[in-house]
Amino acid sequence: MFQCYMRALFDYDPTEDNLLPCQEIGLSFQRGDILQIINVKDPNWWQARHAGEDGPIGLIPSQELEERRQAYVPPEADFVHKISICGTRISKKKRKTMYKTKQNGEFDKADLMLYEEVTKMPPFKRKTLVLIGVSGVGRRTLKNRLINSDPDKFASVLPHTSRPPRPLEESGKAYWFTEREDMEQEIKENRFLEFGEHNGNLYGTHLDSIRDIIRSGKMCVLDCAPSALKILHNSAEFMPYVIFVASPGMEQLKQLYAERRSAHGSQRSLQFDRQSSIRFSSRRAKTLESLASLYEDDDLISAVEESALLQRKYDKYLDMVIVNEDFDVTFRAVTDALEALSHEHQWVPVNWIY
Image: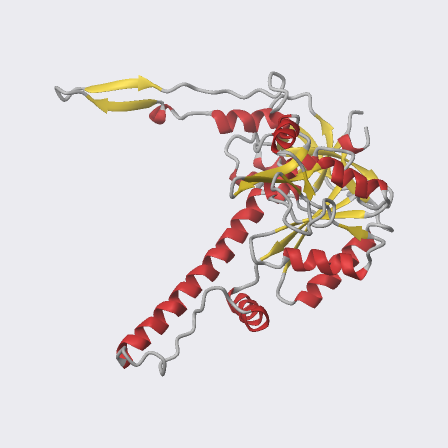
């Protein structure tokens, strides 16, 4: 009997699927659930059950069916209408794009990927730890604390840059200094995990730097951009454990920002001293103070919304999500999760093994 295991990358409720032959035989699941696929002969509906359970076998939509759903253009939206000079309506037919898994080898790596084939492995340690989150949520602080807590177990890469070294700077201390032409060539050869340009100089994380740490027996801790997750996830040599550090709620985020300002100061002062603003009326001072509070709240709201959006977009790559409400609690949760990898079985992508 054919069978394989898939990790669901989306939520499915058969009661909301109008194309399902019979809603009673549909199998509901949530993203992250491991499904045992029993039969894939039908191009539209696969037979599956939840892995590790003796529950009933149900139908789930196939990858090809979902591709067609995503690419389908309703008849009423199949024309782009324009009005000519004389007032008549001109219709121009839209071009339909149909994705087919068998004809598109890159589709499995696309954002429309709905299932990922996985296999269960005995306990083992991941090779890289990837911290993802919005700016200011505490990823770099968490990375530094992990490394300082056990430098024999954790390490971080030094970035490469085309910037000329300043006086007393040495290559291999804070940066690896290289010629711009050499760095541009290696970027073309896809030898960098990520790269960018700042003030006319290139900066980037070289894949060989990650490999060197892995070969030394340490776990490489990365706080890279989310766009780099696809490269790490699809490579057996990096085997990442990805933690999304989510923004806390508004009150907790305000407290974190206040603690940061009191400890390190702030580049942008949001406090107004009425005594030093004699030339302003009392009403003017209150208005400025209110505006500062308003802008601060807007920044906090944007951070929370951006965090939620980022989590939804890259959810299929995440192994753990933790809300950073208390840094000590967050640190302990991360170390406990990494320790659990050493004595718990894990579902991992099959391309890590075969």
